[in-house]
Length: 204
Length: 198
Image: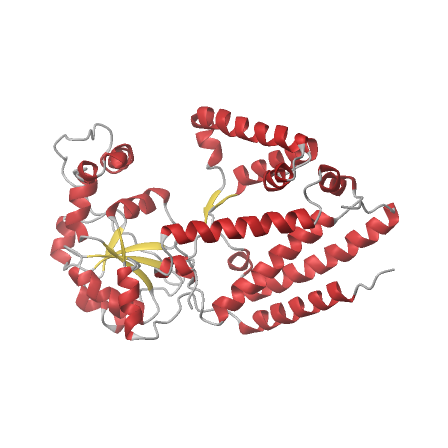
């Protein structure tokens, strides 16, 4: 009979390594940013932002653990907001009260008018270990690309997709090229503290 | 080095494809070395005669799992940019059963059928033809199944969230399950008395 010490050794090593993992408890879900150049790498690789098209798909798919945080002032939010978004104005978000509303296991999409203010918030929040992304181009780009369907002009391949998404947000009759109906009423959602599921982004 | 490498701009798309090709060839090579280019060896699993499929696949799963979480623990893998398949509980269980039935009848799973084609097995060639035909028919009739494919949608669901424990605990449980299954498999093999040669 041949010696079977090798599988036993392999099993012992696996049990040892898995055992240490079990004792470590919950891992950090985001690797901390260790050097200044890493910020540049992340922005260059586009890891700081998501396109309006991606965000609209996340909303339609009801991606668990995803929250859309609008950092604009309250009066602008009241006038127009993305579906499912909630308003935590920038000044408030940078304070303790605002930060306590975020979850380290959730995915946050940061929205402002054009993406500038949200990018500032991204640097602070990502540095603190929150998973977050800037809505590329802000609420302006959302209206332009999704509600008015202008992304289609730049990329005809997206025509069908955007058309389906517009129907989802605006109801039937949202044909490409037609004048956009008034934007949907803001529908801020409140998520109970501690009720967030941890979430990893998928395939983007 | 930080993983996944392509998310941090370390690879061009072309390099990524090359790496995928190398990994694919390596995967095929080791499947063939494990004897998985033979439908007789593969289906012996279903008759409780040879547990090589269980042993090889379960070993791969637990080694990958331990390695994955160690990279996370060492701060070398960013989970937020790792793609994880969302769970559709009902449709995925149904899909698993269909795949299992096809595996038992045809003698291969999709990956091993490609391995067997590479070594010139004619039955595998027919099998791959069937797979391609099935994909073609499914792609034409996909709208009919639209409601069904999304049944039991749970998003990205995790066992440790459900149990309220750390991921490492589930990894340890999987390793212990694997060791237990291997011992049981070996015991059954000895009783049935015929492990197939490659």
